[in-house]
Length: 286
Ligand code: MF3
Ligand code: CO
Ligand code: CO
Image 1 (tube, helix red, strand yellow):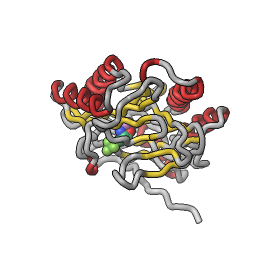
Image 2 (cartoon, helix red, strand yellow; image 1 turned 90 degrees about the horizontal axis):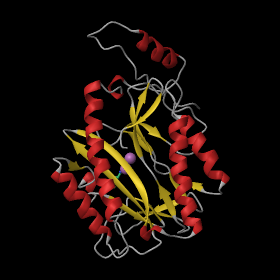
Image 3 (tube, protein in one colour; image 1 turned 60 degrees about the vertical axis):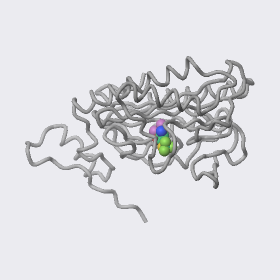
């Protein structure tokens, strides 16, 4: 049984068919999943996402300069929240589907969606993902980085952080216009497995820009599927979550958010918001 793919593309009534339409329709007619017209951002929308990206990058730079042993993850939340508000923007995570804080802070075996807390004190050698999403004038930008608290950790955790960063870069290089989203996870999975790492399957990258989470779904493992056609003007994240051990994860029942590795070995993640151009991906969250 094969799943019927939605025919997303159409020529809007207010204009003639172009070569761009014809090119997308030719894939759609071959049964490929293609974006809907609203996923192709206008120059004005791209500018808006870029501006949200500047503030988002500023917040992560601030954290990078301030993070140190003895700090609580709530201290990081406060830094991000106040910086974002001071720049006329809104932290997208706050109250998103009930999430209680302005940023996600995911320490060691926490994969993602860690909730900042006054009681969680960072120690030298911890590895932490800080995932920040900013709304400015209705436009969204989403990015995350890893930090090694105190600058030094074990060689194993250091390698995990570095290889995960490389997985993001490899994913970015694999995503070419008129290729497929499925190429991203294929490339990332192949590289991560060389180190014996697990690639998280339960969470994916996503379209972003006019909302927090849009199509397409961007898997970081090899699904053996093409996924959506990559078309200039699309904006999406790549955000591999790479585990030192098993790829399997569970959600903390107490808070309903915190995603933890099944074997409680460490996990790392890096994320950028990316614009598809004629010749590749442009990072909007540098
Ligand atoms: N920033 C995360 C992502 O990359 C989503 C966090 S949702 C939250 O998609 F509610 F936990 F903040
Ligand atoms: Co994010
Ligand atoms: Co994201």
